[in-house]
Image 1 (cartoon, rainbow, N blue to C red):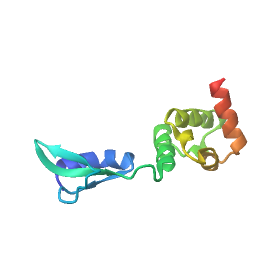
Image 2: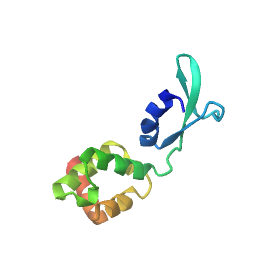
Image 3: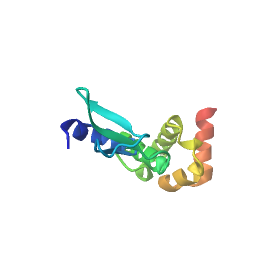
Length: 116
């Protein structure tokens, strides 16, 4: 694999995508060039598993699983997820409540408190 692609691979994973070789690129892929030569492509998976990726991102930012956070930490996590647009996804409140190990009502309370 080209060294440039090795360097871009963690970014692709964080975006929920994957790197493909130059002969595997498709029209929807983002071309990856190095010094004017196509060395591969970035294929994004769209919204599939988007919520999981957002919660995983918040866990990386916070340095621990969201379920293990204290009340204030969970409130900050909900605020951060809201900033990232997580609650625009279908069933986000329910799924995030499950990951936080709190009720949907609690997540709604956290959201209402930050919007007040």
